[in-house]
Image (tube, rainbow, N blue to C red; front, side):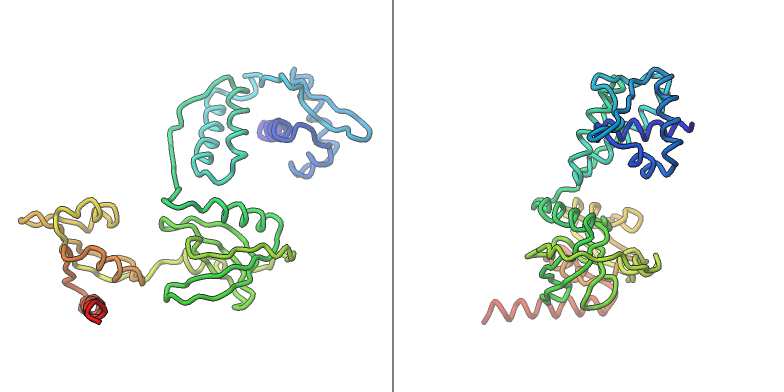
Length: 300
């Protein structure tokens, strides 16, 4: 019996308390006969696992079970805990905390995580996460209002497929019923989210089709821009250090390829009088036009 399947069975029993042999065979992708052989071998190894027949029966562990250290090495136990700690840091699935606590007690150790990740923003997306997670797992169509990069607002009905974290933002990957195609929707632009509870069947689509939009290489532009030294905290946060150099007067010069996205002009404007675009000329003119539009608005 392979060690990873043994651990899978123990982990399932720890998180669900009691399951049938049929459920274990389906989740471990082996026959029911193999599951019963596994149970016999685990019992012979001293693991208090038992079966109960009839209605309400199933396979379960004694509540005070402690995993025998011979089943997993110290390094294996540590790797399992660290993987769960990293997942817990994402704050996406609260059940991870419970599983982590159980396994930490099970292994008799609780180490400080080697990695800590906090993806929370100054506003919360918790409600969206829970609604979208439920809709994805239940394969139910959702409806929402969406604001695109042009500022246009429209209502969408979609079949949600996956939550994706890319370029410091959360996206929903979904099949859009109005566009008849895969689309990625930025979670921060989704409002009036509703689960219609209409079920859908998974569509067969090529992987490259699914991920072509935000996972494909972005269009880039060669940017040369001078920024005042006191805005260094922003520049080093938002641009690769490889394209930043300091000028003799202390100012910073950004010189390299950056994503050619709609936010670029707005970002430069947010730097105010402390930034000056040198090239490309098209971006310079775009910034100047925006500044002139702002000036006119303030004089209306």
